[in-house]
Amino acid sequence: MARVLSEGMHRCPAHPDRSASLHITNVNGFWLLHCFSLCPTEAILRAWGLTWADLRPPGERSPDRRSSPRPKSEAHMAWDDVMARERRMTVRRAAWLHEWQASDTVRHLRELADLARGWVTRLGDTPGSWALADYAARLERHAGLLESALDGE
Image 1: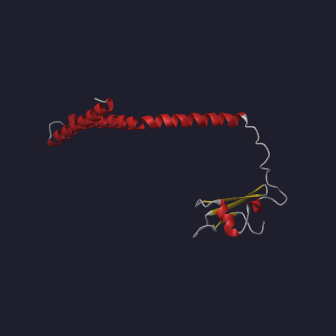
Image 2: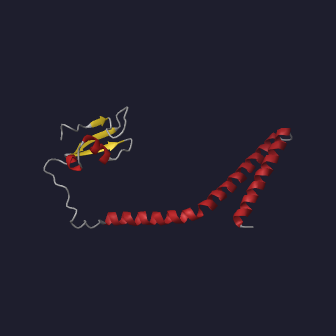
Image 3: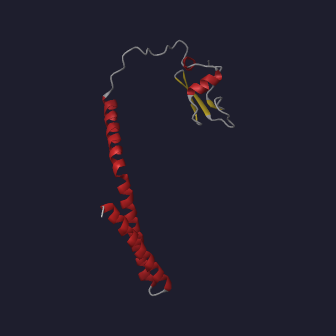
């Protein structure tokens, strides 16, 4: 087994590889394979004619799948609770995402209008300032229309 695999970067046999994209490392006798082109480990093993058992140290047997699973630790259960809460919040957020995006757009339009009006006062009575004032009015009008659509009026 050790003659077949060596640590480091190699060309992946599971896809046409121009440069090394397969990282192989040995941790406590176990061989770990990672293809940065996201080839599944099964495909790499199949291309080399190896099995999962070849990645274990000699004499190491596979875990007994019939044994009962280990009880979860408190940290694992806490992590499961955090992830469940995050999934619930994601579902709740998705229901309001459209309204949040629209309200952000209204806020942004109003900020742009305020910025344009500030430049109008700095420029004074010039042709450019009148065009900028018209632009600010159009931004305010669009923000108002979007806000009234959000309010359901």
